Length: 326
Image (cartoon, rainbow, N blue to C red; front, top):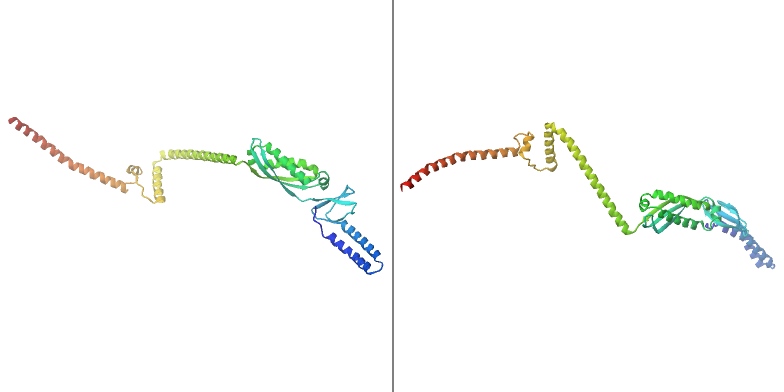
């Protein structure tokens, strides 16, 4: 029902002003009965005129019945009816209306209980059908939407409901629109707001998603290692016939390691020799000095060892002859 406009009340008050004057004259004069009757009649006429004035807003259409039979649609703006003979049956709102509806504990095609909430956007196109073809078109639309939602849930898998909501929205819109078009109502769109599943199933799906992400991460890591190995193989083929490039690459690796970490790197001397860095490296020079000192010590110890052996050989026969003489 539309809100009552103050204009009919203002008209009634204005028209009742002469009736008040008649009341006053009737009370102060001798023939007061005639004036009082005239005042009452005037008030009835004022109420009749005020009740005939109706105002509909821009978005409203009014269904008028004359002696119980539909006559026409009125509005928007000011219009008049015949009181007692005609009456306003419905005030129809032609704007887009939103209706929320839901389906609780409904089984999907894979037997999963879900709670689904959705929003329906609809509009009355034919006010006459909306008022005359159905008792309460708002309630009828709400119940039709819930029934259609349960049908769609029963025909869909849980994965489709979670991933393909746009498809379900279009299917719901089509089903509801076919049911409500006979009532003069057009469904603009249907949007599923939320799909609630049991907590146990949520935990299981979360574990499944985590395992799937770990699997994908390992697959990506393995593929990356394979690509790196292929690149290393190609680089090895390049360095195989170009030792200068290999030496430059090794020197660059040492330089980058020292530059980034700012630490001392100890490298075997054989590696440096293959890199042809010369004897200026401290590690190589120190190793050579140590080896030279060891060789000198060995050479000094060799003559003394030979002399000791000769002395032992010369002393051995003398001792044997002395033992024979005794």
